[in-house]
Image 1: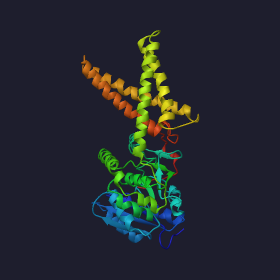
Image 2: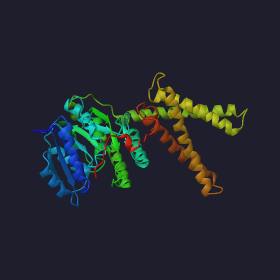
Image 3: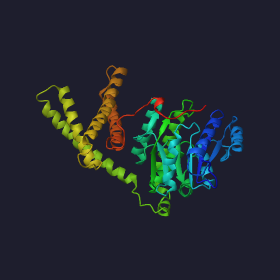
Image 4: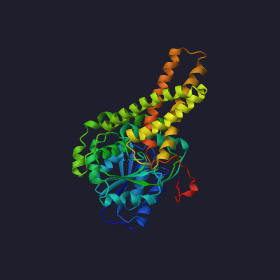
Length: 408
């Protein structure tokens, strides 16, 4: 169907040096909107700092294709491009997607429909929820999952996938939030979602079919460093941002400061840890009367790990009832062994590098390793062990499973 009139949806495609993918994929997107999308929609190519022929190709496309325009932003930065175009849009809903069209376009209607209906304020595609079908390299899968776990552990986020390049927001909501977003690069997505969540806004998630772009030129190391700096900045400044007016403007309920809840949770976790340590020592001494030290140690650790998970489940995280208790215990044991492996591997590395280390050095290494193991265990408890929406293991599917073609 050919859309006409004022667009209800504007889809921004931020690009930088994409002269090869731009033409085929914009044509494919425009064809989908004209034949399979029920709302009037416009495509905006946001060229942010290209030095190749991207802008010239985009200009030709805007002339050739109805419903396609191009904006030139001289400085690079995906966040900068989105902020500028979204701020000037007249559409009811503004969205964006990556130029490689890694996300199956059939997810576009489920993404924007709740926003057009007024049910939700922000919508995101997620590659990490049940129902998503993802084809990508293990390295990127691990980084993505690790990043989202870190967000949950440090900022108390509840959305599942911060960095999927497939998002939409109501324009009135964007007008309220965009002036508060500082980042102009890759962290823009995360910052916008955190501010929306802290304002009590409703974030709708759509499981997507997604195929990794093998030609991706994202500098992973630099992006990770920028994201970590962004998380640290948000942690410092969130309490000072004027989010209450946003919440009141859209009639959303007050949101408790996750930092206060996190502090109370850490205190309960530490208390359970102290009790578990005492129980381990007593149980070890009891078992040691009838069995070798290594056997007594393993059994005491195993029993107290089960008890520790049960106590944290009820006391620290407030999970009641028997539903999913077995799953929680299994994940708790996985978490325990991850923590144990940190201490064991630290000792192995120490004795590999130093034949007879001083006792003080050994104690120092173990102390640091145990602190790291404790932080890891708490983070996993917070973001995975008791999160029943989190999948047990990442899944990978061959490209043939997906009903999606790639144009190059």
